Length: 307
Image: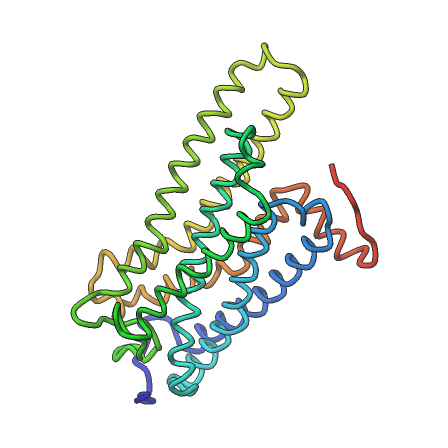
């Protein structure tokens, strides 16, 4: 049964401040991700790129969180209790898990995609076929949804209200900490894959860069382009790590993290990721920035290529 008792105070952060932040982030996240999706779809040279399809998928994931989870948090912290009923009490943590795991899995797939493009271009076309890209995108959704299904049937955790915060979440079941299990699958493993892949990319590009005297002008330009891409990817990774990392760190370091005054601060950092990606794409990538300008200033036109 849904407990509608007034929620406990969230430490030193007033509830109306939390509610306002959730509402603001929701509006920004919805607008930024819709703009990004439309801009990239309309830009033909971008839309044909596998990396862009993964980025659009990431924007769709963040759009769902911005348009559903954050508005629910806005209302929750305004009224200080859960008003949405049993069904949405189960849907909310499912979408939360989907965003957390699917988002980070998508980022890891993007990094792996760049690895093959930069380090193994001779086999890139064989791996990133239309069918394989669709399978990768499907797995990004299937894995976290399967995790949520295990919680729904109470095999690994259960979907219920937290007794301390009254927020609907995945709680323990049969002494199994489902959140930490999901954390390993949805965050830690992808993060390790990302770090290793970054290292391999940097090693490959840096090695070529040290031997530029033996390369043609076109090869040198390609190396510089790849270095710029790696820097953009590193910027994205660091910024998203700042958003994602505080909450899992708190979960690992504090067994009673739900009662911690730091929990809501970590949550706010996590909420901010919904508009981080579009901002990074705009300010770090010339091609992506041009796609935004295309949709904002020449809505009725299509550019076939951008250099």
